[in-house]
Image 1: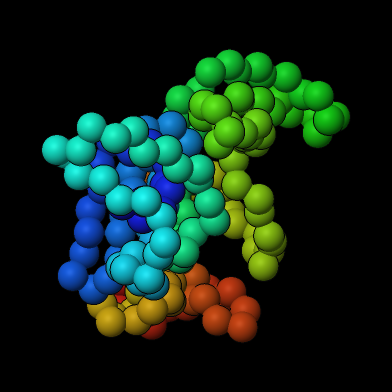
Image 2: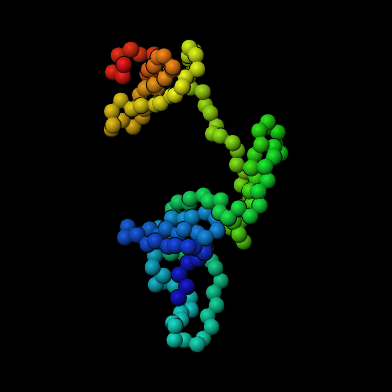
Length: 169
C-alpha cells in the first residue's frame, strides 16, 4: 500500500516518539513526524504474492509532516571557485544532489561577524578562550587572553572590561 514519498535513503530510523529520520542518499536529510498510519487511504494495495502490477504517483505528504531538515552537500557534482558577485573574496559554487532534489549552493569563506565591543589589547595574543563562570551557565562569562609574558581576563556583560578578581590569576 502506498504510504508517502520521501527521498531515496541510505537509512531510515523510526523512533518510538513518533518520528522518522530519513538519511537521504542524495541531498538533504529529513526528520518527519507521523500524522497518520495510512489506514484512511483509497490507494491500491498489493502483496508479495500478487502478480498484478501496481502503479502510483508521488503526492503531497498525507501521513508524514516535515519537522526538520539537515542540509547536505552530497553529492557535489560540479564545483567552481571564483568571486562572481564582487565580494573581494572567492565563493565556492556547488551543484549538489541529483534529480528533482538537486540544488546550487554558494559557500562563502568564514562566518559573518558582528562586532559587539572593541578593546585595545597590548600586543598580539598567543591564544584566546571564552569561559563560563559555572558548568551550568548557558553563556560564557569571561574571555581569557594569553600573551607571551602575561594573561588578561575580560568580563563579558553589557560591556567587555578587564577584571582582576575573576579567580583565574
